[in-house]
Amino acid sequence: MTAASRRTVLVTGSTSGIGEAIAAAFARDGASVVVNGRDPERTDAAAERLRAVGGGGDILAVAADVSTAQGARTLTGAVPDVDILVNSAGIFGATPAFDITDEEWRRYFETNVLSGVRLTRHYAPRMVQRGWGRVIFISSESAISTPKEMIHYGTTKTAQLAVARGFAQEVAGSGVTVNTVLPGPTLTPGVEEFLADRVGDGIPFEEAERRFITEERPTSLLGRLIRPEEVASLVRYVGSDGASATTGAALRVDGGVANTIIP
Image 1 (cartoon, rainbow, N blue to C red):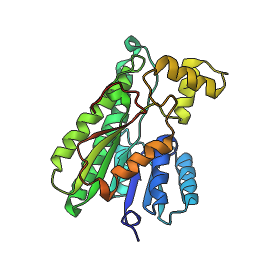
Image 2: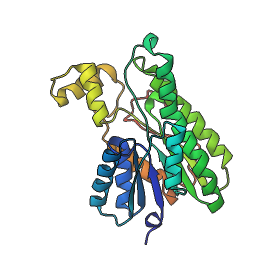
Image 3: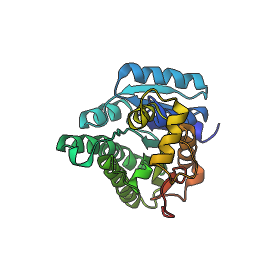
Image 4: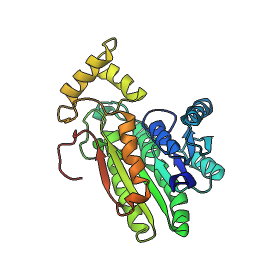
C-alpha cells in the first residue's frame, strides 16, 4: 500500500476541466477522492467517471457551493478531515475593465479567494494536529500578468498567492505545506467557450487555438493550450511526500506565458 492510497484528497470544482484531471490523478494513485461541484447531477457524474479510473480508493461526491459560507459548511460537515486539500473552484470571464460591477467583483472574490480561505481555515489546523498535510491553491499565470480583459479574475488570482503564502507561514514547521500552482491557458470546456467568444464562433478549434495563442498570448513558449493532465501532474507532485520541502511557493505550469523568471 502506497502513502497516497492511505490518504483522502478533496478537490473543489472537480466536475470538469483542471479540477477533474487533478482528482483523476490522485484517484489513479489509489487515494480516496472527494469530488465537489455546485450541481448534484454533474458532481455525481464526475464521481462515476473517477470510479472508472480504477485506483481502488473510495470516491465520494459532495455537491456544495463553496463560494458561500453555507456551502463550505455543508462540505466540511460531510467530510470533516482530509489529508490533501486542492482549492480548484473558480470562475473566469472577459469583461471590459470599466464595466465590471461591484457585484461581479464580489462574486469573483467570494468564489476564487474566500472559498479556499474558508476550507483552509477548517482543514489546515486539523492537518497540523496530525503532523502532515497539503493545501494547494490553483491560481493562474494571470496572477502575475493581469490580462486587461479580465482584471477582476487576475486580481483574485494574485490574492491567492498572498493567501497561500500567509497560511504557509502560519503552519511553518508542522509537516503541513501550502502552495499555489499557476496554470496558463488550459484546454477546458470553459476555455473552449472563451475562445469562441474571443476568436469567433464557428472557427475550427485548432485554428481558434492557434489564433488565440498567437494574437493574445504570444509569449507562450509552448505554442498551444496546456492540457488539464499537464497541470494535474504538477499538483500530484506538490501533494506528495516528495514535495515536503516545497511550501509557501508559487509554482508555474503555464507553458512559459508569463514573461518573467520569478516566480
